[in-house]
Length: 102
Image (cartoon, rainbow, N blue to C red; front, side, top):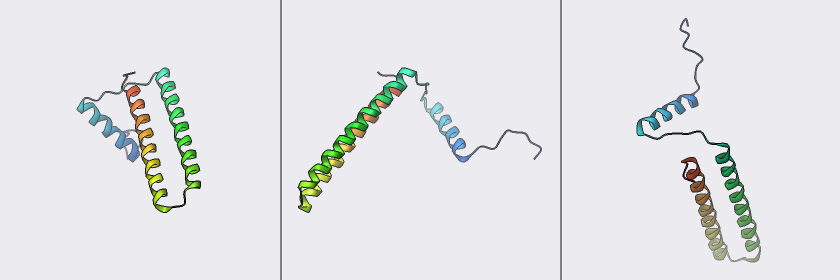
């Protein structure tokens, strides 16, 4: 108990340290986001949040008119793919900003 190595670190802090070291070893660099980057990311998130909400409303509207289980399954599949597409687009745009490729 006489060692003063500083405060104990949580498991999360230790894991983050290991990940940072691994990134450094593999050549991945991190850079702090500028205020413009943060604003652009927030704008992208807001845009896609609205698009996802719009898709949800349209899907619910379509479900109210379809009673056949097979057709409902088809609609659910289309809805799921559209949500995945939008989320993938959003994530790709955000990652592009994070890498500084705007």
